[in-house]
Image (cartoon, rainbow, N blue to C red; front, side):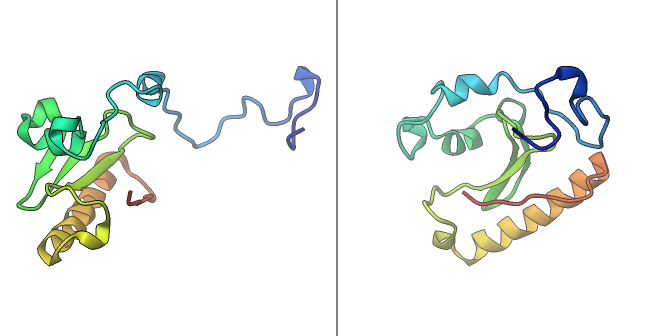
Length: 131
């Protein structure tokens, strides 16, 4: 049994206690998790969303900024509020495959995205990851 949990609902400790966490209800993510719209390979022709998004309009692709080597896009299936991705135009398997200008612009866009998200949402911190 988890700490604070009992077998009696009326004795549950902390359940329903207000906190500062923002909850993101995303039942639409199940379609993706269950396989809908998943790419079959690494290119736009194989359904890779990151290869096909650049050809779309900003509105249709959820693109918020475009550079010479990278673009910033909102996640169609967000993990949290403000989930934004900075993506290189060139499809690579690993961050270490990016060249110098791509790496520099990716870092610059990440920094600019943090400034914009902080101004828009008052974010106190960020989780930055690479896949």
